[in-house]
Image 1 (spheres, one colour):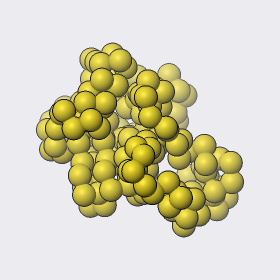
Image 2 (cartoon, rainbow, N blue to C red):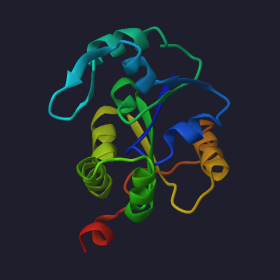
Image 3 (cartoon, helix red, strand yellow):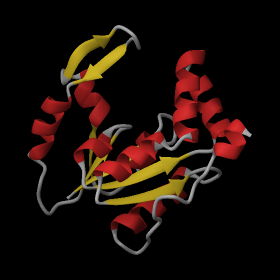
Length: 167
């Protein structure tokens, strides 16, 4: 079973994935290692080869739980766990990463407008949503494990940053 651990860049996906007791596939690494179509001239980043990724990830179909980690991993799974982070905390993380003002604004707006959550809901049979704001990585990893083990259910639609971001 492939489960996407997804969310806007900076919400904690990589940190949380490293704490989970499951096989984790880093989608961004696959793109960097060659599953790309080259540099997108408008955005200055690698453009993922979605067809090549889909073909590669088909091999993982089966009973074993595999976590697909990355901000577009929900394109390749039937179940998505979407990590969310309050925009002012997200801004701090993206600034610490050295994001340009344009890239930071794009990601903050995506978080406020639920872009990843909506995409996941359109593509996946099940979507859970976790507000990571103020939680330690270990706390979030325990919540994720509880969801995967079906002890917890956090359905989509619980997080709303619109008033904070645009209000």
